[in-house]
Image 1 (cartoon, rainbow, N blue to C red):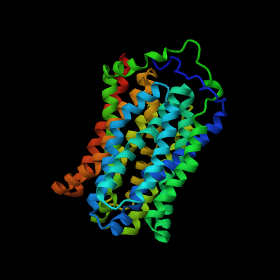
Image 2: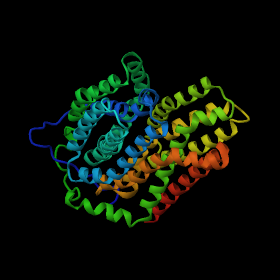
Image 3: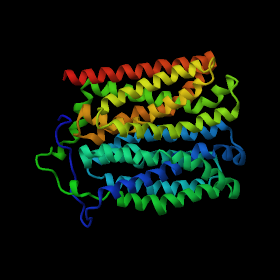
Image 4: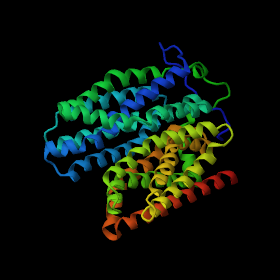
Length: 412
């Protein structure tokens, strides 16, 4: 199947009436904001409170988040297959509901093994209700209209970290971190879950299967066919490099800048601006997407991140380049949450898209999980100068892999 063929559609489930496309997208946007804030960003937001109150080592606590991300990566292909089988609605609702219950149980932990067990389970929930399954569901059910929906969702949900950090810390300071986690659990269960329920209702243009569409029963063959093509593996490398380099920069930016003698206030300001720059990048993409293909935008994102890494290296001599880095890294990385599913569909087609998306999420999430540890290992050998050079090389590798994927798809 080629990307020009009609996308698979799903018939409405019994008892579900078609809903407004705009309202369903808005519901999914706010649902994703809440689950990202309460399941993902809550960990870095509360890690200092856990360290101070529970008395565990920082590495012990951080290891739980790594375990969650690894579990999420391993579960992503399974989630994709469930979406291909027509269970996307149940997956998103159920994943959010389980995440809410588990985050609530985090407020009760007393021992490290309990903490780890809950975060491993939360990793499976991440694979069921964060961006990857949501965007795979939209791509499957809305076809070409999915790009606009995905863009709108990321514009709102991109501010999840901006919500989570101040709210979690305010609640923790006033009432303790246990009340803070319980509060986020309540928000997920009482707000996000119903929003997922509304957001995954069928919309008029996808309420019935499209005539001439591909046989949904053959979706299981889509992943096997994709994996026989070099494009699949080149995209896997390209997307993994995005996750690996951004993960390194985000987790090590503050100590990296401290080593350069940059004040804590300036470093925190720079790190805080990356999130808003991601939203700015998505807005800029929306302004040009009618005139520029998504493949080109994805290629430009690699160019932006390559320039960002160069600016970060040069910031040692010219401090003003630090904010050039923030602008380019934030905007370049920000559009990738939109370009990854769209480019994947463009180059590999939509047959079995859930399974393909889930398989490509495995190296992406795996790279996110190992990024902090890899950077620490490189630092022990060559300091942060070596880390910065490594990031530059890895971004270059990702950009080269993406160009080769485009060329391979065109030859086919």
